[in-house]
Image 1 (cartoon, rainbow, N blue to C red):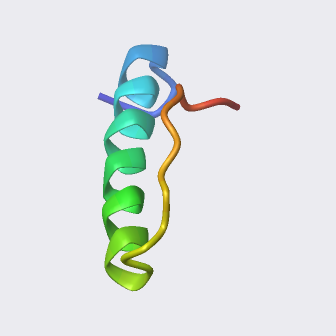
Image 2: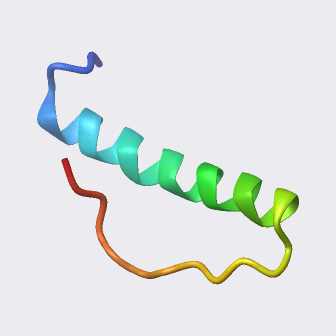
Length: 40
C-alpha cells in the first residue's frame, strides 16, 4: 500500500475523518457534526 493508490488514499481519508470527528467531540462536547463525503 502507498498513498499514490487512490483506493488507499480514499480509505485513509475516510478513516481519519472519523478520528478527527471524535477528537473534536472530546474537545467540544456540544459541537454539531455534519454528514458528508471528504472533499479534496
